[in-house]
Length: 208
Image 1: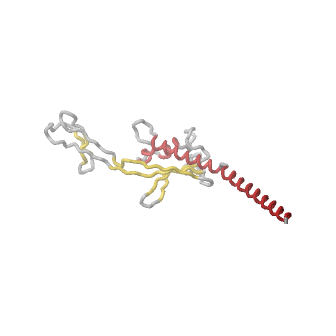
Image 2: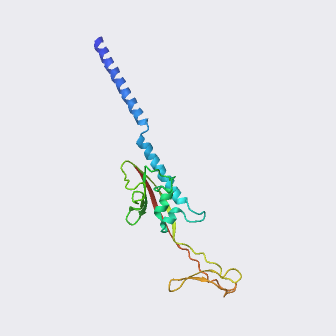
Image 3: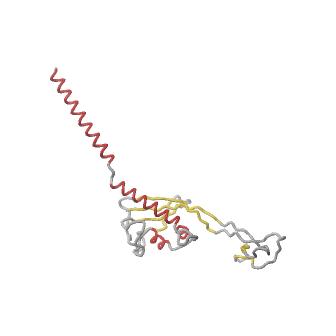
């Protein structure tokens, strides 16, 4: 009986050691950073940095941002090359050459993302033909835009300024006050146009 008990105890000890070793290896493997995870994190940071530069960067301190220029009909390719990369004319892009990128806008009517620009499309892009095959990460932001800019107008009173926006005539031409025809006691006739405003959702996808 003593020998049987000794054999049983030895088997249990060996099994315990094997289980402990297996659990230790699993914990070690789970805690070891994976190359894929670090690359995915880097792609996400590149998307965030690029989108931030597009949403806040501008040519002039008082001019529109790069995203505002894109939605106003500006040269999207030139803007994306300058900020994100894709052309040897701009040797220090945010997104390295090994990555492709895609700028998208969300269509609330169709609940789908629409492409505004893809670095793989232009033939002169240094990422021409590059497709997503390994990983991709994205960052998104809301863009507040004036589709019709506001016109504050100016006072038509003679003792201040007789120039100001004064509406649109029947032919669609903008009218502006150009001479003093009223006194400070008359009611002002220079109009205020609050403009038209909208919010858009934009996403930048970085892929490799």
